[in-house]
Length: 165
Image 1 (cartoon, rainbow, N blue to C red):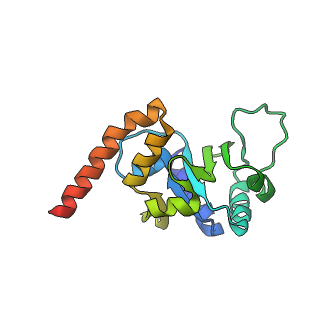
Image 2: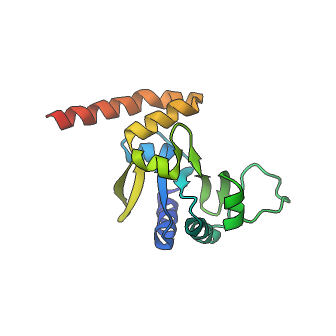
């Protein structure tokens, strides 16, 4: 997803009033990581009104299930999101993963404790903290997640040392 596409996505989510947290590689980049990611991950609130807002915000990007047969019928609406939990999607602007629960943290409400508001493209967005990212990467346990841990831990140590000064 290009920078312009990320801005379009965040603007659509923000304008629709969707409750979400930027997670995964995108959150790592916002927190200072040099990690390169092609997709965008977010954790969303499963409150009924937010499911409807999320579905409406994403509709203009024509989401489809990533890796599923192209002839498989799929419509991302509030009922579909409510019936599922985590979705890996391909959209007009790139790959998007939406999570109702995050490994190591839990639901949106639980992940809030590991988020902070950061301005991205002029919008205040909730983003996983370095502590939250470290926790999720450890819990996921995939090689690509574990490889990122030393950098995230170093960034956290730098932040802590700057606070002490």
